[in-house]
Image 1 (cartoon, rainbow, N blue to C red):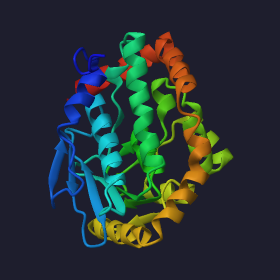
Image 2: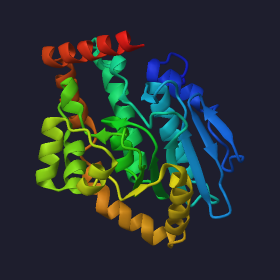
Image 3: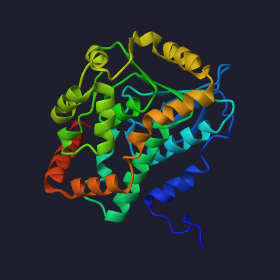
Image 4: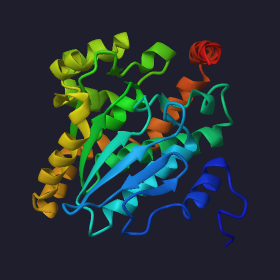
Length: 288
């Protein structure tokens, strides 16, 4: 049977390329593992910093999605790594999904492969055997906030201009079942309704009150605080901690998969979504 890399689709081509960019089990103190992603560590406590650096705003393109997934997979099997701090090397934390990947509407096969990769990234972080801490140091709309919610502990810099939230409906996206479940788990049923239906974006203090984050930290202390938290979490017996996490989160992870992909395909094909997405992309183009 020929290798899938011989005649690759766009996502497969990226995955095949990424195989040559990922770290060995023991990354150096500062290793670029793919365009837009950098690792630091592990330190003496087994903490690795994964920093997104995909200019201009860490948009979740196919390339960045695959790089994040493969990096978390590799670190999860590295005996020297006990915990990960996910953060950004840019002004923004993560701008969320790359709308160009789904608007104009792509071929169904290309969409299905893209969305499967998108969900695989979140599932990998959600169920990672490692202790995971998110250091939110910039804006985190929609998919950026979802990256944070999949981590075990979340801290945000105390900078009032920063905002985060699950604002998918603002661009015509119907949040899939696993996003709704994760929002309800995090915020509570009533607050999840308010935030998802009204596409709310909130500042750090409101994010803390709502339950999006566990801590608001002075900007200059954010990384030090998150690394210390990761070290403490990584010191807990790994097998018990990882098994507990999986038992608590399996019900969310099982909502990802073929049914979710097909529901999103129906959403992406709708005239309403395409109109809103094109308006957003046009507005973004004017601001550049």
